[in-house]
Length: 136
Image (cartoon, rainbow, N blue to C red):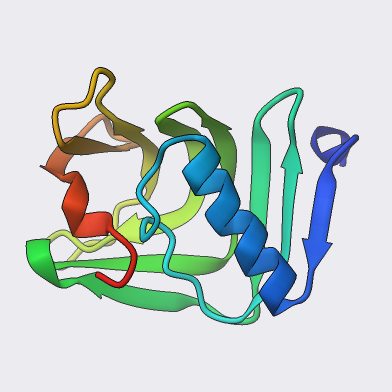
């Protein structure tokens, strides 16, 4: 794929998970934002911000502080930049009985302690950033 051209790619659970965590840290996003299972591969193209994560199976995680169930598909991709992931694919948040896809995640800059999730339909949900800290 052309969008993966020039990518830094890590394979295997330990190296891939370390790279995913380091990308979140570098771009000032909460460390627990992507609670992944058995990660197979992570890739990142610095020139475009395109990143992808491949994991062995789909993962569902409940963020207890905000009572929100989120589904992470086997393939997740998007464009990461400071305090934001846009054109995100492979992440869905349960709303009532529906699982609308999350298209963008953004942390306020300057910091207000809030993080915003925007669906492709334009619906925005705002939560405290600490709800997505590592281990939540």
